Length: 136
Image (cartoon, rainbow, N blue to C red; front, side, top):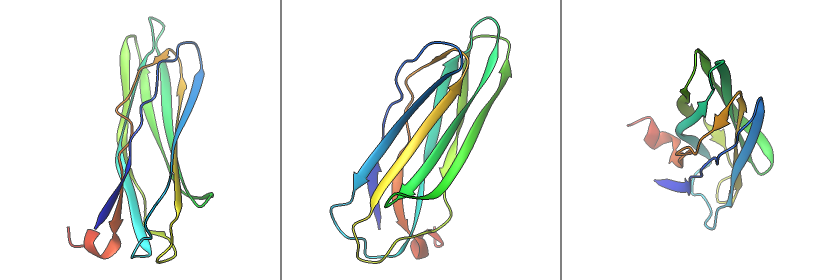
């Protein structure tokens, strides 16, 4: 069993050492029939670092009922110029959620670095029952 939370786009921002954050926030309408879940999805942030080169990073933080439960960072290597991509896959360890509750999930994606940030495909978030995940 899985529940799709959603996805978001990170918009255009230009400038040096620009930091931009966006979050996806959802309170589940139906209680979860299980108490251990994974949150995972793909991350891709594209930056245009310009003729002087530069670097960038993206950080994802996961909160359940306002408690920080997981995080992951992705780094772009320095480059000479042009568009560069920060990409990776977020995969959390099992997160304990009280059974038959309706938790509030918030995922924050923050990018920082030189140049402009382009729209990204964002992150798709899925809940997976832990015993089913082990069988996949």
